[in-house]
Image 1 (tube, rainbow, N blue to C red):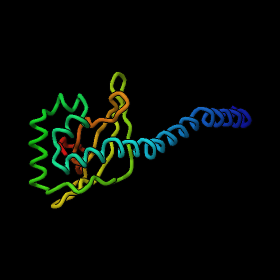
Image 2 (image 1 turned 135 degrees about the horizontal axis):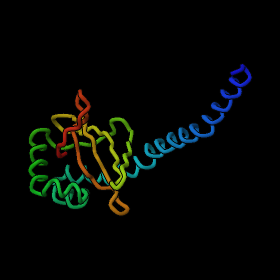
Image 3 (image 1 turned 180 degrees about the vertical axis):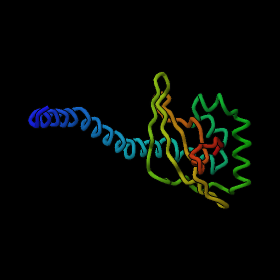
Image 4 (image 1 turned 30 degrees about the vertical axis):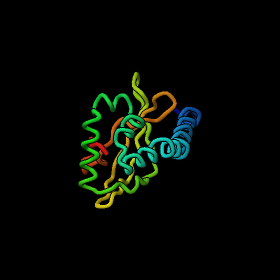
Amino acid sequence: MTMAQSTLAGKIIGILFVVLVVPFAIYGLWRQNNNNTNVATEIEDTIIFPYVDAIREGRFESAYISYTSAAYKEKHSLEEFQAAQQKNLTEFGTLIESAKATGIVNEQTSPGEPTIYRTERLYKAEKATKNVVYELEKEGDSFKLRETYLSPTVNGLLISQIF
């Protein structure tokens, strides 16, 4: 292979990289930015704040009925949810707020599965503050809680816990 052929091949590879890879990278950055602004605001306004208000006010049944998904209800009964909220109240005190921990909303998609959104929040109560991951999904036009977890542990695992 001559030097001219080698240079031409390098140019072709470079052009293909710019044409094929760069647009996907730009789309990925735009998509993550959209999630961290528009989707994050929608999640806070339509589910996190109203859910936290209901928990803080002791309206556990209302929080369960209004803000949890069908998948959540399959996994956790109303009685289990109420008992866990009562335990949280005893252990941590009254919930004060659920503040942004990172401001990042991660979107997960798998073929044949609903799109999952995860956001990490600070569960601030009178006696303790915990890092909590809220996992959400869309049901119709509304976000609903699919699961709540203690924030990733040292080994990166999420531990399911009702918050």
